[in-house]
Length: 192
Image (cartoon, rainbow, N blue to C red; front, side, top):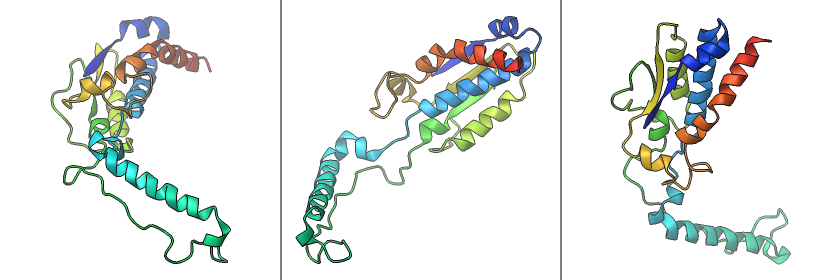
């Protein structure tokens, strides 16, 4: 899953400040695709639907108990023996940590990246910093900027496979729909 930015459109709009505009637009697009990328949440997986429902029922039951003053101590806590202390664990692969898709966005020049980064970055700081470092190396001799993600489940995520993905579905498609706005904003910033 990737896309290529056609830099000729930027050069026309930038009027001599193409490098600065391209870097700004590249960073804006990179930030958008990273932030739109879902991070795995086992509580939303189908396999964990029963556990989620049970855990929510326990929380709801305890909350309902708190609405009655006769169930509370003077300090406002539930009296001993009333609270249900139970939950079901979520099923997930051993050692699972969400953030692999978000951590695998890569920025390259003139050709698409090959392979995954191996980075797990649920907060996106490392991925964004790595991409910005590459974008800061942009110069007029570069023909294209590629922002790509090589994880095998990227295409299904793009087309709405994840209930965590923002609405409307799409990461790259929605970001690219805003590309003209990013260009306009970057060019306007030059005038300041």
